[in-house]
Image (cartoon, rainbow, N blue to C red; front, side):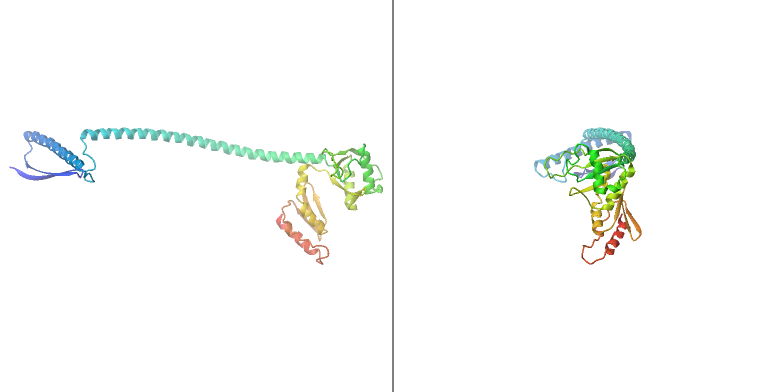
Length: 321
């Protein structure tokens, strides 16, 4: 008994072949025949597809229906093996890259830990350095506690004996009645700045080391009480001797002190740089010169405005220090 069937073969959207074969019962003889027919069929299919691709190539009609020639099983195996090898190589390279990345991450993590430890150590060192600097500045200024700085004395006025000149200078400027006993002066000399080369240039200051701290404070109090001091017709000034660091801190208050003097407001500057003002029985202190100068309103002389307005503005400065 034979059955007629129709088979349609489609190979990569390239061509269609329709075969009509009798269906036989599966026997050993028919199995061999079937194998031979399948082999012959593959050859015909491949040959027909190749022929049509070559014909389309010769006619210049290669398009979506005939993009590439059909592949043989050997070529497919070769391509499969090549892709497998390349994929294995890519996996190996990717594993190497991942291992290198992990090493970099470990090294970076260790570096971050070391940097964090160094930063903490640097902060500790900075704190210790500040403490040491403050201590050194305090020790230096303590060693200058009995020193005075005389500014404005003409160059060469001291002659060859500066100590004798300074003792007479205090008696002349502050009054001989204030020094019943002679001052005990350990040292006195000009500062180490270069000597003025021409007449009229600013003279160097004279540093005086008194033996007793009480004598230094007495001289400063007398100078503050007398106000403006002159020697041989030239204005002179008596200041406590401080380190350059403290002088820099105090110089930041110059603008505020100028406006306080213009407003006839008494003030005091305590060590190292603390400005104190007493207004209407209330004491105001400033630990920083960052108070806005614009808040310090000063009335010019003859304006008819009382000093109370200026004092009110001074009290406002406390909120900004």
